Image (cartoon, rainbow, N blue to C red; front, side, top):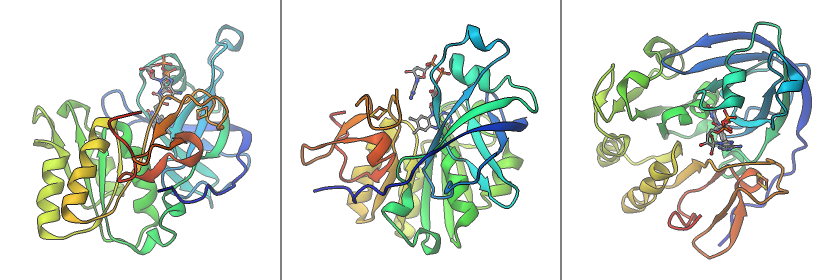
Length: 273
Ligand SMILES: Cc1cc2nc3c(=O)[nH]c(=O)nc-3n(C[C@H](O)[C@H](O)[C@H](O)COP(=O)(O)OP(=O)(O)OC[C@H]3O[C@@H](n4cnc5c(N)ncnc54)[C@H](O)[C@@H]3O)c2cc1C
Ligand code: FES
């Protein structure tokens, strides 16, 4: 049992410039970059590695960090990322000023189009946990739909700005575990299950591993496909260091940075990583 053969796509290394940095909720930012070179960034789930040099480059000998492509506007040469600061690299990126240079390497990995070439014409249930919302916008922007997004945060106060969410995802159900903010109280899996009872659709999901693991039995029980953009610690992002290895149910091991991040969630061994 294998994934589709890996597509060869040469990532572009370039210095992009910060066009805007917009707060989109508590501890959440939309970073818009002006690209020096356009590339094949559109396939949902692809990612890029970003590095901000910060105010004093020599003081920050940082590795670059992986981020999903959030939105791509090739006609304007603009690429968006949705970033939640959690440590030094993400904090530097979300503190940069307009015009600052950002080192970008991408696109990297395999997107949904590698597994479903006609994804733009398919109806999906999109499932996002936390900042796993980022690649969903890329799919919705391109898709002829109909799609419905199930989006959850642990804390309702961390939900993305509602007006911004509505601007790219007109059909959504937002939930949180504490029921605060604009979402309903609950889990995305509960909302998804209710929708699957009414209509079966292919699932595309991104979020914490616990969520992705919970989707596999749900998808199996309703007989639908489930594709996921899986996250892992990625040191190199280039298939070299093996830090992103993950087992499949047949016992073989894939590198999520090269063979994913978009993979068939039903082929993944979620017990073993
Ligand atoms: C394919 C992929 C897509 C991602 N997309 C997004 C996105 O769209 N938006 C977003 O906000 N975040 C995204 N992330 C997570 C983001 O890469 C990490 O939050 C970031 O690397 C943390 O770097 P830091 O220097 O701020 O934190 P650190 O101080 O290095 O670490 C803080 C936390 O982040 C984890 N972490 C550190 N480096 C990595 C790494 N290279 N890969 C994964 N986890 C790491 C650490 O284990 C730790 O728990 C994505 C990760 C992957 C693998
Ligand atoms: S991150 Fe180094 S091999 Fe995947």
